[in-house]
Image (cartoon, rainbow, N blue to C red; front, side, top):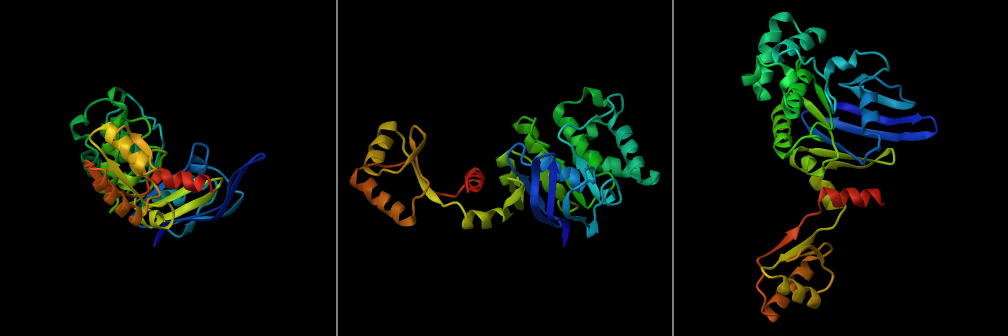
Length: 301
């Protein structure tokens, strides 16, 4: 079952065509990585899904129900975490979640238990009596996830949730998203490609207002960018000697050579040459195309 469906959606601001014939499908209980360069239309797409903007054409459905501009019926099935969530700094996490739960129509008898459950999930149980105004950016992002889940939504939309966090804070958010995907489906928008590779089941690459790539990451890797191989040496002189004898490499470090278009036959030939040159590499391995290379390939197509 698809929790979210966009079919031939278009949106224009004046003379600027932001989205043109955009279609995507997000299956239930997946983390869908929604990626694209800055200005690609990701935030506009999310506002259309939330009914905050009127689309010019196409159709959007959440849990099979059509989204209509200015109406909130489908938003009962959606939790939303903006890139910079805003809070009442004088409230505690429990007070804030009680406020959000009341607005979302969660019964008062359920809010306390649900709040405790969510604060435990996002690692804020020890801060339950602290004022939100004293929270770090990472703590606020985790509290933002808790408020977005207070009404048990079928779809959680996260707009750049890790963009302003340090590596430790990013890992905390990624771990939380991994834990909740059995409860809810996640649309995860970001420009931090390593985060997508770590957590997402499927990806959609938005470019030029249309979906340039969509599907499971491993399947996309097989269909698009080529694999290659890399060789790493202990000494820079050894790397230079081998590169001169076996051209076509890219240096991504002083002692590491990458052959991005190297075939299996090329790799076998390189092994024979190593013996002939009396060189012993530290490591030699096949390399899969990165999400960055897939992104660049689609953007330049």
